Image 1 (cartoon, rainbow, N blue to C red):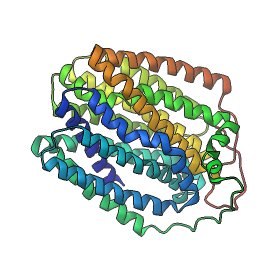
Image 2: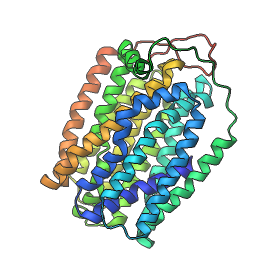
Image 3: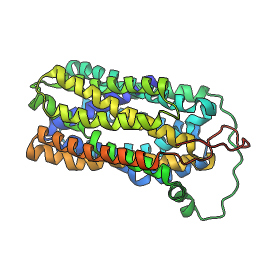
Length: 402
């Protein structure tokens, strides 16, 4: 997975840079990322339904093969001398359709790989893998961009999928539990995750707050090319290094959650994560030196992953087995929807008011969301309980403080 994710981050960095290089406008990298993420926002509930009703490993295996084919297509188009940005938008929309199935299935697969007591640690270690790739992938992409160009990033990403495909083939997982036929219609089954969250307002609040933090934080990734050129007076190298700084901070956050995360500290980690996102955006909007910019990018990555890893672990631990896929689908919808909404607002805003002013507005919104996190954590205390997940369908239910 580490090999495959590194290739994916190389492709993401190359796509953002290529879209900006073809147009010279910040809105086009944002639109490419929106096309990639929007399908997961619209179809995440359906993807979660498939994860609950089908073999998760088979779903993930098929999506990886589809991702491989798309990476090969991108490499071929770029080697052929792509001149227009719209093919990137179309291809990434198709990639997003696959992502809508892949993401809930991968998230719901984690409890099948580890015991219940190790689940929070597993979520953090999974985030560690993701963010290790976030740190190394853009740096490698920068080298590839300087030497050959974005086509090499796409080709290496296609090859990297072979690693996870081989790993999935070699896995020996426990047989899935026998599922009872559902009396409701398929449409009702697809959206039953929303009904479950309505009955669990403590978990619904975690999802909503994560969406708010995502809208404030993740769009920074698509503003970095303009920030690197206009503020730092750099090019592809400055862009890849600031993006790697975000990944390095995220890596440290994943290690922190894996080491110190537990039931008692969960509220504290959520508060620290939200506060660091606000502080990092405020600092980034004030600096013009590369070292300081890298520091605040690292802080931003740390805060984002600390908040999201803790929030996802909360959902995984407190959601019942039969609803996990659909709840993870809703989590994927919220995470996927937050990014295009933020990009849609901040990309054109950066072209209109400048990238620095756009980041200042991000910091303002992040501060409002952080105040909401403080108010909610203090008022509700996250003390509601629910059955904790188990690998065995016959395991007795327990309670877990959210």
